[in-house]
Length: 113
Image 1 (cartoon, one colour):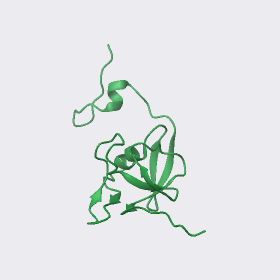
Image 2 (cartoon, rainbow, N blue to C red):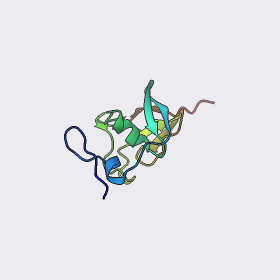
Image 3 (spheres, rainbow, N blue to C red):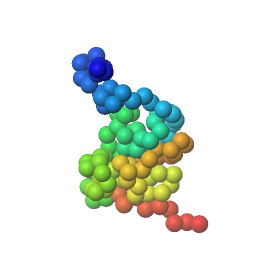
Image 4 (cartoon, rainbow, N blue to C red):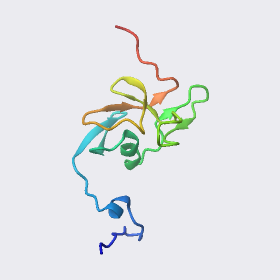
């Protein structure tokens, strides 16, 4: 029988429940700062892992938003990825070298050519 590992506080971790190990790690950039990410991880998960809980502001009041539903239904987790606005962080896989920025309001891309 496999034993579950516990953290120093005694809590079980998702990794300990499935016995998984981190595979490839790489870096994404968020608002100019490098963040670690794991292969197969969503941008929202990478941001959460780095302690970043909000990465969008609403268009009318400027209220902060982050992950709400976590499954792509609510659109609260929108970010700009590699210059492309309105990407749902909970559904967008993190890729090596991605440049992610906080999205303000509607997140319209520059239309200049």
